[in-house]
Length: 126
Picture 1: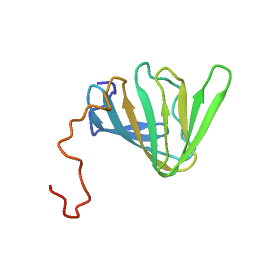
Picture 2: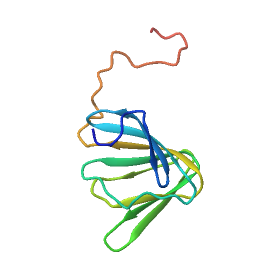
Picture 3: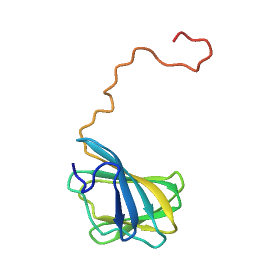
């Protein structure tokens, strides 16, 4: 897989810690805890999308463009995506808990075969 630790293992970072709790050949989900003013390296992923989902706290996501920077501050419940090949970093504006989701293109969102339409639990056939 793409990361350096086993699923479930906590990996210490200068900025806090990360724990991968799901992985397969197309995606990974990491739980991160970042200390206030902690920041990750400026980097990019060759093939993976990177989604930051803030659970608690505030995270600044910086996307580096050719001649400028795009900064987005995420707070509780907000998320932001970074496409493959784009340099980026995050900075914790306060102690922050977040999810980092990685995936590669190729998953088909229409890959579902429905047998019924679901319902609200108000007497519809189940």
